[in-house]
Image (cartoon, rainbow, N blue to C red; front, side, top):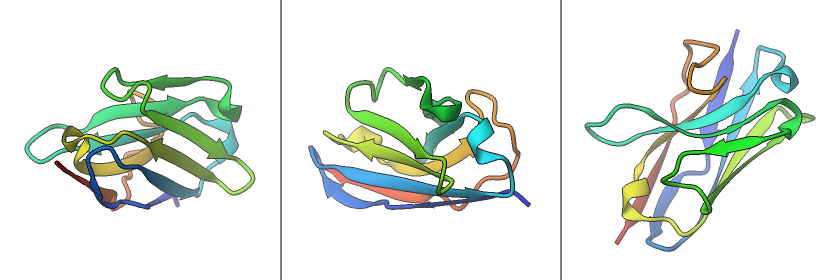
Length: 118
């Protein structure tokens, strides 16, 4: 059974930093790309960052490029999102999943709320 558990969100001032974590289980974690997504109130869920298997390459949405860094620990089945220079427009619920633009699984975790105050 696929499980995705996000954590690390919170309330931070503009310009601050947060590090999100995602614990994954129920599938061959090290063999798949992993991504972070976010959904702001009234908006559709969007892809934020992707890391390929073994961390060979990463891709970012233009809106977060240069500020966010995705990484993974295959020994612990964890994927991280380091978010720096946060802006109010980064406020959203953040989710992780396997895959990229198209997710491998229909399951979603509960997400973690990130709120950036101006």
